[in-house]
Length: 140
Image (tube, rainbow, N blue to C red; front, side, top):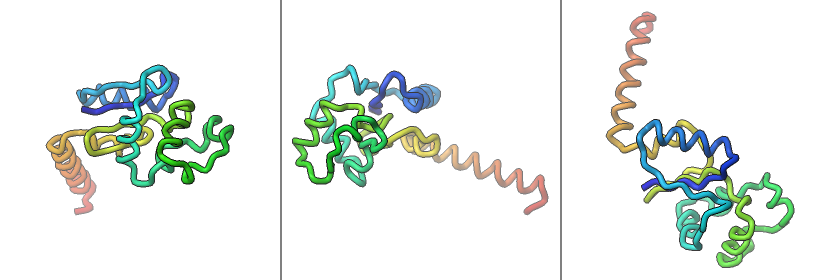
């Protein structure tokens, strides 16, 4: 199942949830400010990153500027403790399933959460539409 970590006032979070609903994808929402966030969940998110904390920590956040910490030098336990106390450090939305993580909302990238069969059909349809357009313009 898809899990989406959000903040109520985040417009990207709203767009991501709307996209998931429009595509009939079930998801569980976790509010980063008000809901429980376990160390296991944070470790799971970190395990899905390609670049570690670089990918999920918002370097533009007020919390980041205030802390003035080199996150690469922290132990995992220290990192988890800082995130627990400063959840606004996390970029959002964070969208995960069993194998994938998406940070932020991007309409092209979020398609990876669609079942493969749906993605294949969309790809075939797009290819057909492009071919028809090229034929109608005399390109091919």
